[in-house]
Length: 242
Image 1 (spheres, helix red, strand yellow):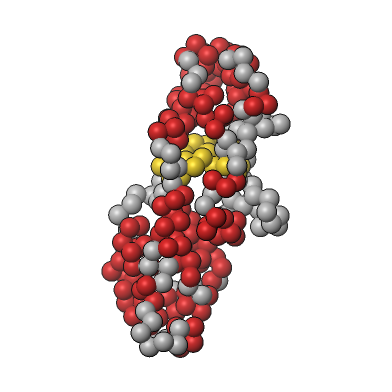
Image 2 (cartoon, rainbow, N blue to C red; image 1 turned 135 degrees about the vertical axis):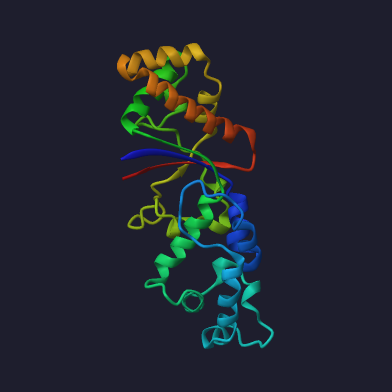
């Protein structure tokens, strides 16, 4: 199990997934670097022949009887299963393909991320709150992970998309995501920690032999928190994964 934090620009993700025509979406996605490898091909030159085939297909004409209808003007989220089958005829399962495309887009809008052992981080977060004389309940959950913030920070247009397509959400528990929005107090606890706070917290919960490695790991966490604090348009997500 891993404790994971993503700082992601969900507003831009919403734009390319829900609002912009697929051609515009691919044009924006193609040059963006991937934070984590997804294997999704967003090259515009590979999309165009697929769109031409889709436009001539019975699947497109069935859903769009107007002769002027053009699939290149449709957002990714609006494409039916039948249309996706025409775009990607080699795909074995369309739900898995839709999920694959969404996560490929998602990872291109992750601006910072962090991975660590959850047990070690829970102990450290509690120690850091104590060292800074903070009420842990205002910054951490009952199990010592970042406290949950308001879910409306996930744009409404992609809430359902995330819960159905983001592989980190528990499909067996509708409305109860494994991932959640991290509340601001957690980020400020990390961003405003002074070096001596960090030193004392590490001394309290990390074996001396591991202190150097943990300090480097904390530096990465601090960079993620700083990335969150610098931009009002990004959202911090916390989740655990196998």
